[in-house]
Amino acid sequence: MTETTGARGASGSSRPGVSASGVGAADAGSAGAAGLRVAALSPEIVIGDLDGNLDRIRSAISAAARRGAQLIVLPELATSGYVLADRSEARSVALAVDDARWSSLQESIPDDAVVVVGYAERDGDLLFNTAAVLTRDARLADYRKSHLWGAEKQIFESGAEAGAVVDAPFGRLGVALCYDNEFPEVPRRLALDGADVLALPVNWPLVPRPEGEHAPELIQAMASARSSRLPVVIADRWGSERGVDWTDGTAIIDEQGWIVAFRAVMGATAVLSLDAVRSKALPPHNDLFADRRSDLY
Image (cartoon, rainbow, N blue to C red; front, side, top):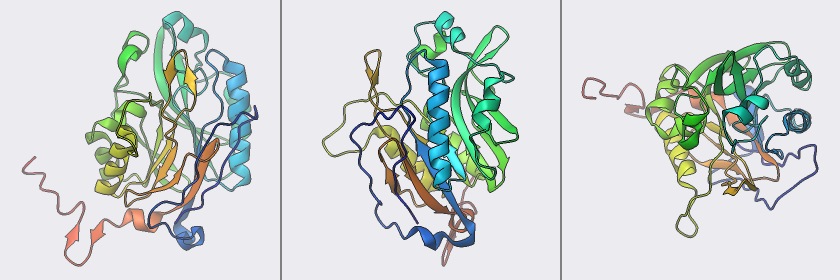
């Protein structure tokens, strides 16, 4: 079910990475007609370098396009950087939905692909931590993060939705941002609303954990994927920014909750089976959704 490769950003920068097929992963060709080729990308992001970041994002998208990716996910606040000093700095690197620079970025998107990229959105006097959902010819959605983490609350307004489900060429795309996914209600709601896959741009600060363990945020994403049979495409940061070390948790998790692609240099790609995602049956007697006792909780 997986193909694991690296994707390199325009700058040529790299960092140590691991490429792993994951437990129980099958060959990419087994996904069949309902296979969805996905890419989680982590190009170099430089705080405050809006135009440079856009250039590196374009090059990363082009690299994923050469691998035939149909869903391409980039990190949270990828156009601006994350550790913004204050609202004034955030505003200086924010983009409006109608900014002309979006057209240039969209030109790098393949005809049959969808890109999800995090950015600082400017809407009049308001600022939002937003994920744009783009095709080459259309803007499908802009999801504004509803669960703000730490100092984000001093810069951004909170969005009005707990994640979003967007109609995409391949099916139904769930979108959330970073801390959103730490609330189990969010991925479950998206799955119940018919999402086939969850795009999750993140900026995960590195936190202490026992030797050999995954980051806690990654474990939570694995659990939510398994409980709703909802694969997750996670684009995280690597390196550090203004004293914050990033987790380097870029990963693709299949519908069983297994990591099938992880920390490839500058990104990871895999093929997911949408047939497996859309069936919630647990033969011979159970069903993940039909067995829910919503009358009890």
